[in-house]
Amino acid sequence: MLNRHGSRWAAGTLIAVTMLATGYTGGSHRSTGASKPGTGGAGNFCALATEQSKGLTKAFPTDYNNADQVKAYGAYLLASNARVLAAAPADIRGDIESVTRVTDALGHAVQKAGKLATPPDVRALRRSPAYQAALLNVTRDERDRCRLGASPSPTG
Image (cartoon, rainbow, N blue to C red):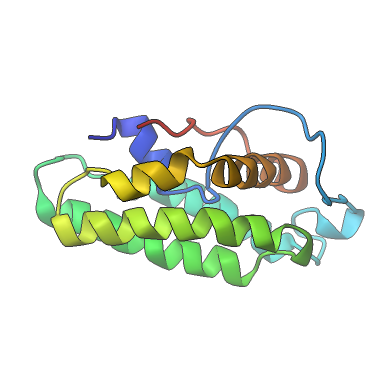
């Protein structure tokens, strides 16, 4: 079972979400003025990433045993992931796709089960070095490009 913070992150963060408070030290990310929120470029991406981060907190079930709330949370996760991925800047898109694949698997699992639980296959994906590297890149990019604060790190 995921704790409240781990579930909220897993749901996001994509991209959200969403995630580790560290400095950018590698990868192909190049921050430019055009990628800042509201200036074109990735502005829509940043707006959507911010919306997702806030929305996941609001959508998080208040009753873990309420299957309808849990399923609605899974649905929000899937829909918000799709919006963020569609707006992803080219230089970080591959990493966002990697993170989204895993968080989408979680979204589908909680929708199907109607409970907050991370199936073993999703847990294994979240622990993979490739996913962890992509997550770190996305987290740094969202922080640097979009000025998003750190979200809780994944658990489980």
